[in-house]
Image 1 (cartoon, rainbow, N blue to C red):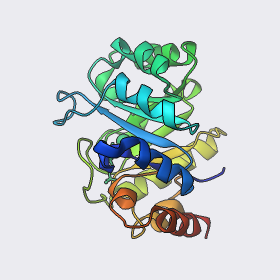
Image 2 (cartoon, rainbow, N blue to C red):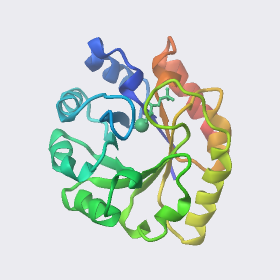
Image 3 (cartoon, rainbow, N blue to C red):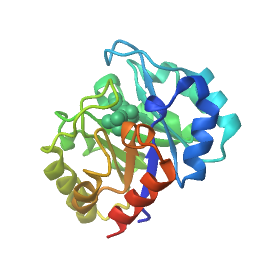
Length: 219
Ligand code: DX5
Ligand code: ZN
């Protein structure tokens, strides 16, 4: 599976968002990761469909939209219309997870499930046919710039072997604390898609950072 880098705009300069998105795209990003927070499921409030629509205007990269909101089914259509390519939902926020995933697919987007660090992998047992990506949070969601939780490495390995055994080619995405200093061990554990906010946007040269990350995950 081709490894991918997904810069999270949460750590970008929002006053210059269009330029920031184009800069990481030119630097070799594969997806643009967009964090939607509602101040309920997570303690922070970020952005809604309007900003997704604005980002869509400035890039042709797929938009990887990570919904950290209660009852996400209320907003699926709005985010797909705004230009979301992938929509990740947390099972902790969905009363009927499989129905929500199916709704995402019916709207024409790619459904993904995001798991908090303490949420067990068994949550995925009965929805594997309905997901096209699995996002393992490697920090507790809510903020950029938090420290990677090392206990997530065995969780990534376990998911990887579970998917191999089930003969499912579903990419594993990791999100939180991913930077040049951590990306290699996360890749070795089996991750395929690497979200990085501060690990990219807080570095001086995006091109250099993403090139280094790609070299580290290819090794
Ligand atoms: C955290 C978000 C992340 C965040 C990661 O709740 O889901 O996507 O932007 O930030 P870093 O890469 O700085 O840990
Ligand atoms: Zn995220």
